[in-house]
Image 1 (tube, rainbow, N blue to C red):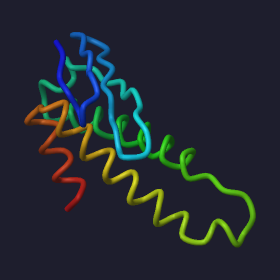
Image 2: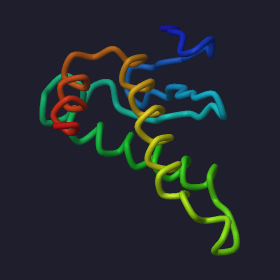
Image 3: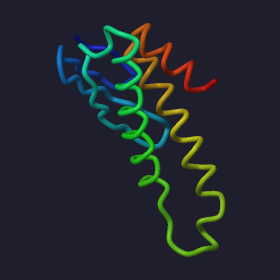
Length: 106
């Protein structure tokens, strides 16, 4: 099955499905289990895994050295994570995952 995310191709398999998450700065593969998205509990667990993958990548994308350059890094990483995570959830397009995302945002 193929889907698009901000003009990036997304290949999804039935068990371990990689997805592309993209922002204006980078694209990345996001791995998740489509089978786990069948239940709210499974979707919550997959959401946490996706969030961790995105946060790790955003942190790496915004890594800097030196204390003067790191000012505002936390804000950049947080904004990157929110944008990229929202794009991934939107692209995967699963009701349980979307509900987990909305619940996590409060």
